[in-house]
Image 1: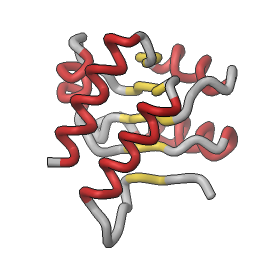
Image 2: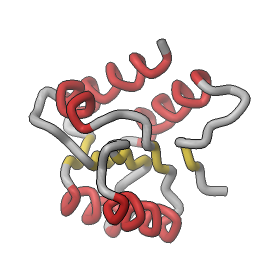
Image 3: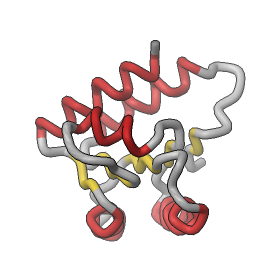
Image 4: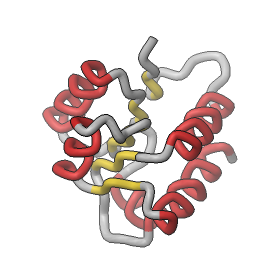
Length: 114
């Protein structure tokens, strides 16, 4: 249920122009310090996840690895998406809250930066 909320929020953020989709755009958003959350598809390659995990740790941005690339693509109204960066703080916080509500006891796939 809460994961559906994340997907709905992704669609809203896409329509609002608050997403950077694709690896290069997501990296640019991180480097410009505009990214507040990064979502990496769970079926992305290990190298892609490691690359974004390292960058998110460096820039202190939370990362979610919960959805496959087809689900991310259909939520944003585009083709398959492997990496999405959320550039709006409000959308990012709402998505993180929804993820944390879905797994209150443990959240192994949601990595926040302390």
